[in-house]
Length: 57
Image 1 (tube, helix red, strand yellow):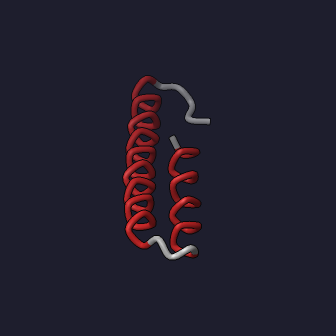
Image 2: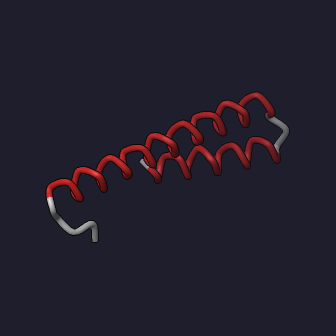
């Protein structure tokens, strides 16, 4: 999921450089949403592993 967020972020940068503001904004929004979903899942995973008594690393 982090890979998809990075892909949309790079797409947004390229679109912005080429002057496609609408596409750049949409791609940046998608990248931001995917990044926050990734962070939420990461935190949930860490908490679940900690509650089970397993090491996080």
